[in-house]
Image (cartoon, rainbow, N blue to C red; front, top):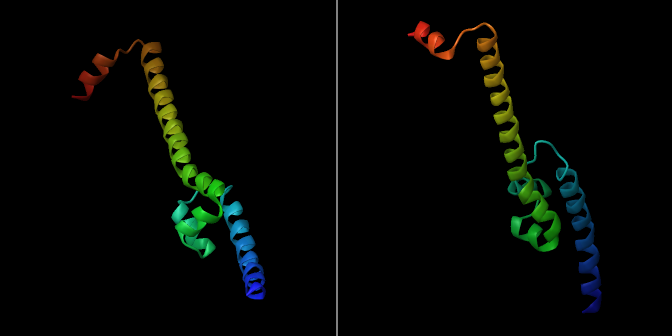
Length: 105
């Protein structure tokens, strides 16, 4: 019985090590993939990953949300900068937004 337990541990440790390597590679991949994709790429289920590597799983789950939040902030900042640039251009040429809008109508 103990022999089969030892064999089982050895047999499971090799794939587990490979799964962990795949997950660690994905933990730094940009843009981050959803955790479900990570599980599929590692060849195991999400539940199995969550059980074997709880810390790494939490990181994989959080990364896409953090990336999206940062991406939205970058987009918002770029839009604000563009609006600021346009407003400064209008003010520097003594064109006021109301007269410019009236010209478009």
